[in-house]
Length: 492
Ligand SMILES: *[C@@H]1O[C@H](CO)[C@@H](O)[C@H](O)[C@H]1NC(C)=O
Ligand SMILES: *[C@@H]1O[C@H](CO)[C@@H](O)[C@H](O)[C@H]1NC(C)=O
Ligand SMILES: *[C@@H]1O[C@H](CO)[C@@H](O)[C@H](O)[C@H]1NC(C)=O
Image 1 (cartoon, rainbow, N blue to C red):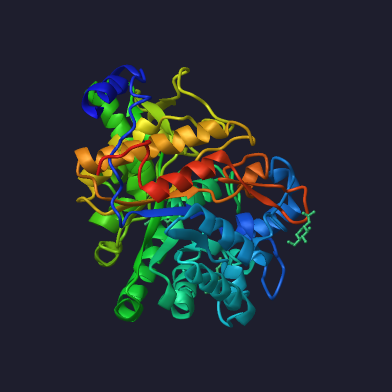
Image 2: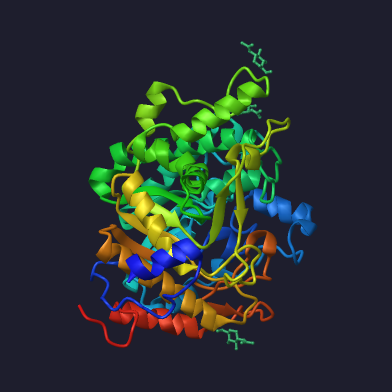
């Protein structure tokens, strides 16, 4: 069905395959998960010894940074609602729950002394999950670096690698006996390009084409160190798996011309390859390395704006993965253009050197530039399979934003993604091991505050109880998990 129907889609951007849903059951060991992150749901921002993270300080000092001037001080109040949260997770019937640990609860000074109250919180959550038959899928870092470390340069300080890996070791040490899956970093592209390129996320540093690449270099090194610590000190006792969750849009070439295809491929390398190549293959993708080096030289710099790994670093980072974590939500069309002229200061866009657009007939959502194009996941999964030697892939995030309405489109979106994922598994032999919906419930959506809702559960933010109510899309996901099937009657 893909080869004909979606081939047409690919070429002419016509969606003919809307209603063809895969009818083969998912494997019995397929991971069905749902996700959240600490700052977005917990609240309790200064309780039990927790120190502020960069998100606490940003929202407090600059409320206008957030669309509705809100913050995560209370959020879903999950810090006080472990039983309630686990009950709704159980109601969905997921095999795994993906959540993150707040560094500021475990090590309020960023390094050094452990805050036992913070450890106790996550121990309690993990125990409650396990008592209910749900496996924890734990993100070590989901954007909330302690402010005390930010004051010393944060991710850009060369000490970050040891700050982070010491914190990760503490997580393995305290929780690892009960954790089967670890994620070192959630979405380094958002951390680095958002935090140090465009500046749209905390710490809101604008340094396109410069500090965003230094950040990427630092994050990859910190990831690798944490992986090695797990591998050498914990794996034999704890038997878990550890990797990183990388995000990218799918990039659809504007035409079948070699130049448009090459441009789309290059964009994937700028978003995904910048992180995935060092980890899965060794070193940055040649196309990025060469482009940034050449443009840097033309700008009169004596070295590339993309820091280089030493050979020892390349060897140390290569192979630091146990699966491929992919956050995938939306897509752009990519068109080749003439190379933009060299300029100072540099820009990410000029480095990438492509034209990006969204065709007007693609269905939009409540989020700017976010479109509903589930079919684009299949070529993306194939690209990962072919580029990175067929790794086991876990879709660590996928979900639909609305203003609280259009829940039927959320159901359509999730069904569509799962269907194309299943097609890729069966027809293209892509190894997809699991899928996690973002998000369990509506939460603090970073700069968009509470204006945007991703939840399978609605949260009533006007009630002190933050009452959670399942949406029809949640009922739908529950049924999919129960039957491991996307249609009324599956064949095996
Ligand atoms: C980087 O961290 C070290 C401690 O490891 C600190 O002494 C130094 O001042 C930090 N650098 C910056 C620029 O803050
Ligand atoms: C390279 O450029 C940097 C920054 O402009 C400068 O500090 C450094 O001395 C230069 N190095 C060489 C070898 O020219
Ligand atoms: C809030 O939750 C408590 C405990 O579950 C319950 O007793 C109370 O009635 C709830 N209040 C509202 C307004 O829902």
